[in-house]
Length: 239
Image 1 (cartoon, rainbow, N blue to C red):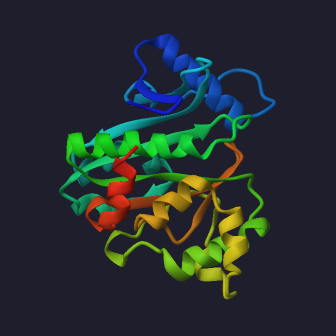
Image 2 (image 1 turned 30 degrees about the vertical axis):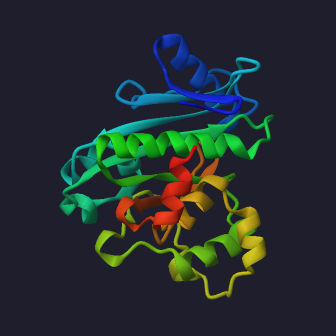
Image 3 (image 1 turned 180 degrees about the vertical axis):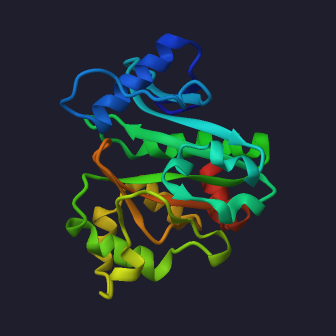
């Protein structure tokens, strides 16, 4: 898939996957040596967004297809969240993980093209639910209080699908916060990927996991495809 100066393609070999792991290291573990890799890399498909004018890898993410709720325990997210409420989900799922954009590149079209590629996968494979972990940079909760207050006020998962606490270190923002969010500040500090999930009808867990290994705070994020507003779905498929 190609739009403008960017193309999206599947990783074809170990060199492609290593390039993605190097970009993930730069995005998630800046200043550390090595590459970002884990046991889930082998089972996932890796998507690469490249600048066709320079050949540079500017964005990557990986996807894991799951045939139904009973298989969700095989996902990356299940390490950190009790997803037993989703065991009854009968449709196909797609976990999106390790999504990152080169921190030295600033172009909103990169995120749009990546979402267009995800939309194609969803349509081709008849996916009913997108999910994953949406990450805030760092583990300091204080700077994201308005974002978390906004998530509590507007975007908590429906009770029938709500993930429960599993990780040992979590911030229970839905239980702890009583503040009214400053919406401008909330949107400014919210990760772009999470914002996109939310405007399409996505929802989140009622707590954030403090992941000190990745130096992030993350919330479980779900998006039921049938809940996406038609106009929004058309705009995403346009890329």
